Length: 425
Image (cartoon, rainbow, N blue to C red; front, side, top):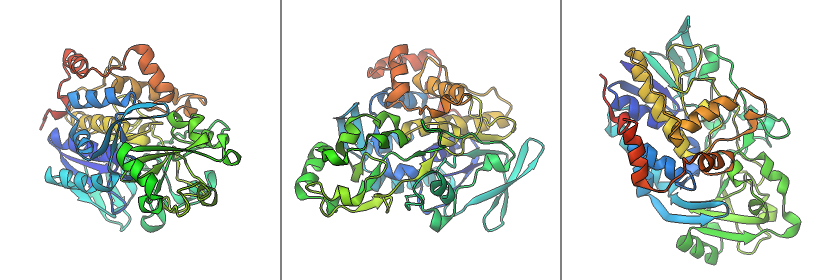
């Protein structure tokens, strides 16, 4: 059988791996010249409840990319406001390693190849059309196109195109495959009712900062510097995708994280004001290029789905990552992708689809995110193991633990150890 994965972010790459492990021929399409998408500006792993989720993913047999990010971690067990146990991965090195890994598995990867439409018969997608009008058939499709872009969304709901890592002006805007197949997408909202949310951080060139700041970052992984009182902007916290960072400390301080370049934990920060701070006199943004004005708008294209990651009212389309809900982060993308790839093969073979139990954090977050999308208030909630509402839920339900043996035992008792390594074809 043949599986087509549309979108090469963390969820798409993970979906490609689990579908390949299950025995399918897998072809992946990515519209830009780099895999991982917004993952190229992320890099924070294992913080707070992500530690639990990470070890669950490993026990389930989908830890391929966890091991890669661990390998490229610059700092381990770092603490910063509201967060503990963070591992900081070098985003300047991880993408080529991921590309080599999936190609070595025999997965066909097509870069700078944008999928723009589908052919459908009834509830079955027969094939896809590429931007150059090429038509490609497959048995099952997995959409992981994310929820950022195209440019007009950033213009309509944000501060205009700030030229983020997705580079819509160069490679074209994201196209919703579920929408092309006749499914009405859902949108996340902010507190003021406006659709979408700003990406939660920017990247600054490390070489543009003062030497003492760079030394502290290289040594400790985190630097916290007080914002001048007149420049504190608490309202900006409400606009962020990342509600786990919507803490007062993130408005009153410039919080820097070392993930290769310097991750500035703010959706945007006016360059003129940033350069007023000692050590930032020569600061230069590297993502987005207009980081002083705005950042990408996300959560405008979410497909209605089941907890098996199958898109509702279509027989052979699965989804993962931000396409599948109001999820934030690499870990969250990996588990949704792993489940989508695994179930894509099972579905084709007529086997019962896997739904991860809610006694696991990874199962509970997938189900919880799905439930909340049905209400207007629920579409304002973001789901991440790293903090905010869902991490509190993890703790209340007793799902949060740092005991790796306990996690392994729980997965084993559910008969799910290495489930994502099973081959069906």
